[in-house]
Length: 167
Image 1 (cartoon, rainbow, N blue to C red):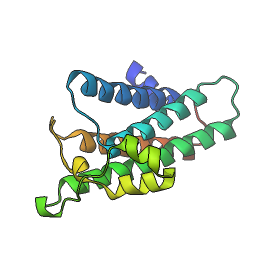
Image 2: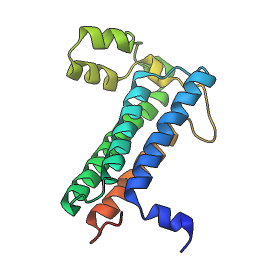
Image 3: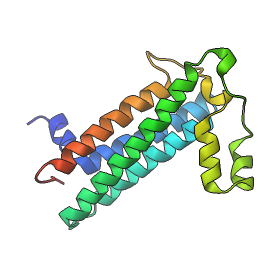
């Protein structure tokens, strides 16, 4: 069995590695490439962080299989939330320029002045910042994030419904 196949059969490693790797990659683009993340990008990073956390928790030795299944379910739910967020951003990016929503206040201001659920609602409604994209390699950031979220969703669902989970 090839090493790649062995790695792909380890949900804790795949969830942790992809989640953490994508966050680090986004941070590198932010620092080195000077690409400021929009609020929807930040929510996508949080989704990847929670997926990575589920993967890290699955690595705990001696964990009951029920707890592993719950963590796989949570990772799948965070992947689904990430799909919705990335899909919303892609929708905003493909709107005609006259239909793009106006820009909202900075996220720091929103976090300081509004309750958390209103912040999330304001962010999900989107703003003009989320409709812009500066970088593209075949796809833009949001489209790449959607691809990884869909992969992680189906990957986690596969292992959730599989008879036994290898760790």
